[in-house]
Image 1 (cartoon, rainbow, N blue to C red):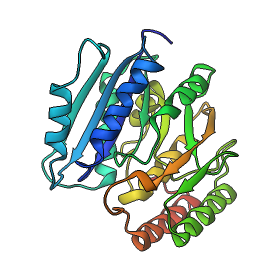
Image 2: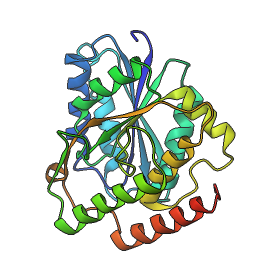
Image 3: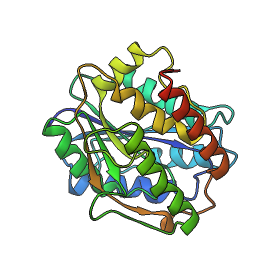
Length: 261
């Protein structure tokens, strides 16, 4: 897949403390494991109240072009905070408008909890013919560090519920935002669905997957095991747990009734 563009996109809200570590690890990944790959990192700053935008701009301005000649950093700002769903919509639309037929978008969180090194394995599966590859906590070898027992219980329960109600072959982790998509898959989905990202909050990640589940011809999806590192992130989680549970249950009810938006 040499010569194609790899987009690495992340929504970011008040991630000024986490982004320097994450962006640095992505650059190391580019240098050590993907030296012949053009990489564009797209950070959607969702109206952060901290220095997130300045951190991204400064990192891009100070990037060693001799050491990382094929890495570009883009900042796409929201003037006000619109929430994860709108940030994801901006990200997907932005990349779909730029991407080519062999390009790949990897989405990940901006809080430094997703290990960038996993991108190599995800790209390998895309190169082998997969349309969507998910970094999964529930595949053998996956685990979560730094998450409360309550949040862990909810996550496992949600995984089983999604798999029972909306089974997708080889998929166990429906909520994780660390995914690799072939860009043409997203371009087609954005054309077929007038409101492809229609859910608010964290449930939008489930909704994206459920909509891709109905694509025809059917998409080939798979997972790679991930160690999710909540213990590496600075600052408190932005997920409002009870609201997310409520939104997700309402989403599942609508999808069971066949409503797609």
